[in-house]
Amino acid sequence: MSNAVFDSTTQPVAQPTPIPLRELLPWVVFGGLLLLLAIYFVGAEEGATSLVPGMYVHEFVHDGRHLLGFPCH
Image (cartoon, rainbow, N blue to C red; front, side, top):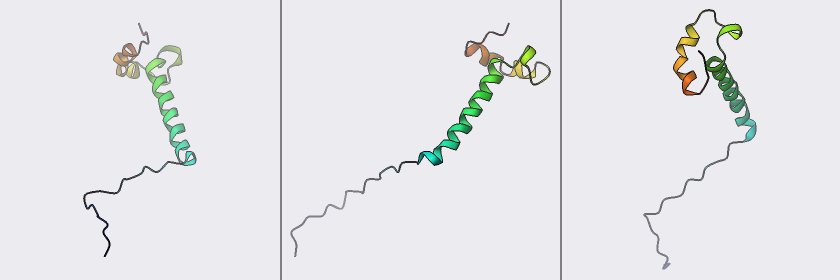
């Protein structure tokens, strides 16, 4: 019989698995495009550059514009 002492309270440590760049890149591109779209609607969606007629988008993001430092009036 062995004199080894086994401690039953220790748990195996979980190691994080790295995500390959090939799988991560499409999500980074998608997130970047969404970010650019959001910045357009918050920062430039009014007047001559407006894609949506009327002031609906402008009024919806109005407080966000001021919070982010975009002047609008």
